[in-house]
Image (cartoon, rainbow, N blue to C red; front, top):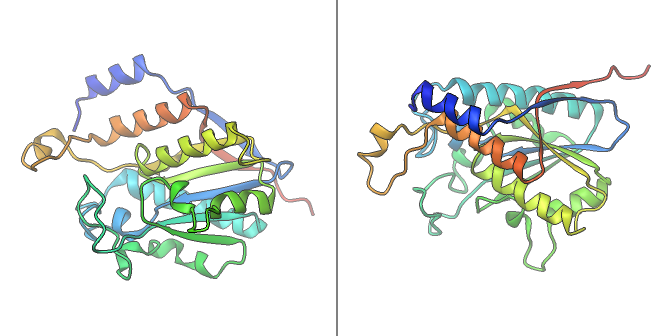
Length: 245
């Protein structure tokens, strides 16, 4: 684990001013869940799953479940990415993970109910960046079509890993928005409490050939910082106005 002094230094030098957001329904809003699958979140589920219970990851799962419930109650659109790989197609530098047909590539138990919700779109992807993983062979893009079909103006992004799959998707989405490919999308919001990343301390990484150290709290912060630097809105609180009766 990175020392507290090192983490404090980075946070002081690279601050992330987090906002709060209240959704009233005035702007068409969609929820994007990134790779909240067993292979990344469930203890002992695979090569990239936590080895022991992880507070940051379990907190992310809980927050994502609560958000998904609210969006589904309101029948607001939800898009869920599921990391899913063919066994003979590697994804360097990572070891084999989330192989199609295994439970690793399935949603965590607390989110499996999404499969039966009419407002939810599930997309299995075989690459880090969900935006790229949404392209079909004919050149169409499932995520782009989802935004346009539902006329989404704001997306809220949660999932794992903050600095890997979440960040890559956010950056590509922002670039596509800036180029006018995602109209009417305006805002990309990253909810920090609904994101998490993995922990690979330096002393452990040293014993793994080719591995890079990945201190969890530090890299989570860096992921949020990079997302904000690209134009995302990073928030620490998400709430909803009461439904009109």
